[in-house]
Image 1 (cartoon, rainbow, N blue to C red):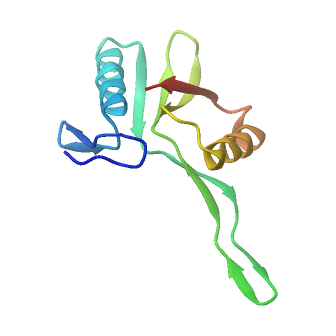
Image 2: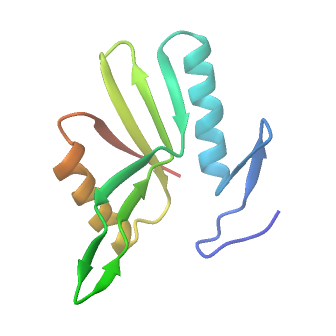
Length: 115
């Protein structure tokens, strides 16, 4: 197991490599909830477009994307949930969270799970 910038330890569960032990633990919890029928349609690493690519002064600027940790349908609440497991909220994350909420806040419930 290797250590990363914020002390995270890459962890493998079900053959899937997670960026942190906390994220792997949350995955196991969500799999149990899915098996119990409390959530469904669990997706790992869903990607959301925050800003399309564009040209400026003849140069193409890359699109900005947000990749969450999990997306699923919460059966009891009747809503789609997007989750991110965080130990540290970086400035980049805070900006992407705001962009996500502006663009997708009506469509998804956004939750941060503390790792």
